[in-house]
Length: 400
Image 1 (tube, rainbow, N blue to C red):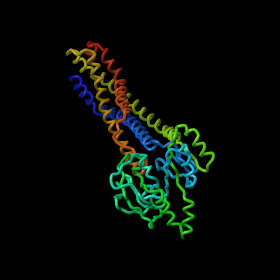
Image 2: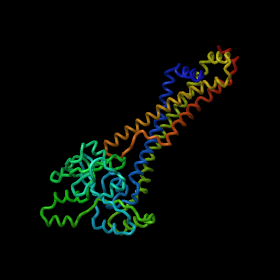
Image 3: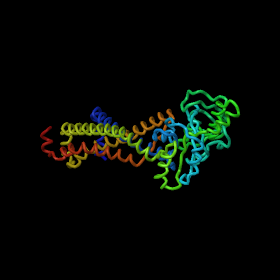
Image 4: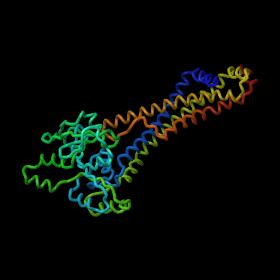
C-alpha cells in the first residue's frame, strides 16, 4: 500500500507531464472505445431491423437504395410497383409472409407508412397506449414520433407530400391517432403506421375528379415495395433471380447489401482505428520519456529507498505502479468519453430520424480498452523500470 501511495505522489510531482500523458492516453482509448461501441450499436440496429426479412422487392433501381428505404427508412424508394404484380408474388409458393409498404407522405419529417398489421407483429412491437388501426385513416405512431411531435391518442393530423418536411399538406384528409407504440429500439419507433388503404385514399381523393376517375385509380393501385420472408432457405437461390429476370421488379437481399454497406463503412472505421493507434503510440512514447527522465531525476530518492531496505524489485515496482495509475485513470476517462461520443452520435442521428442507436452499452469488445491501456502504459515503463532495477545502491549514492 505504501508503494502504491508513493507512486501516486511521484506521478503528480510533475503535474504538467502527467496531465499530458493522461490526455494522450485518454484520447487514444476513447477513440478505440468509440469505434468499438459504434460498430456494436450499428450491427445491433441492422440485425434488429433486418430480422426475419429475407428479401425486399420493389421497383428496379439501386438494390442498396431499396434496402435503405424499405428496411431502415433513411433513403428515397426506387419507385412504385403494381398491386397486381404483388398479388402474383404473394401466391408464389416460395413466399411465406409478405408485408406491403406504401410510402410518399410525412408528418413533420416522420414517414407515414401504409402497411398491414403484420408489420407491427414482425417486430414484436407493443402498444404503450390505445389500439392498433382497424380502419383506413387510423394511425399508430412510434415512440420517437410521439415524443417529438406530441401526438397522442385521439389527436388528428394531416400528412404532407414527400418523405421530408416541407411538402404540400393533404389537409382534406386527416389521420386519427388511435395508438402509440412502446419504444422497441426498432425502425418502428420513428414511423407513423396506418393501413395501406389510407395511403391510397389520401392520394386518390386529391386526384379523382369523379366516380369514373376513382375506379380507374383503384384499378391502377400501387405499392412502394414489399418485405418477404421465405418458406424455405432454398428460395434464397431461386426467388431473387426469378423476380429480377421475369418481372419488371427487382429483388434485393438485405444480407448481401448490408454486408456491402458495412465493407464501405469499414474504411472510415479503419481510419479511426489508425488515428487511435497513433494517439496510443504517442502516449506510450510520452510515458516512456517521462519515466526515463524520472529515473534520472529521482536518483537521490531511489538511493534513500534502497538504504532504507527497499529491494530492487520494489524500486522497479514504483515505476510500474506509476504507469498502472496512468492506465487505470486513462481507461476510466477513455470509456466515459467514448460513451459520451456515442451518446452525442445517437442524439444527432435521432435529429435526422435515422438509425436508432442506444447509449451506455457495454459489449464484451470493450475489454480491449483496459487491455490496451495496460499494454501501452506498462510497455512504456518496462525499460525505465529495468534501468532503476539494475543500478546498484553504490552508484545511486555516488550520483548524489
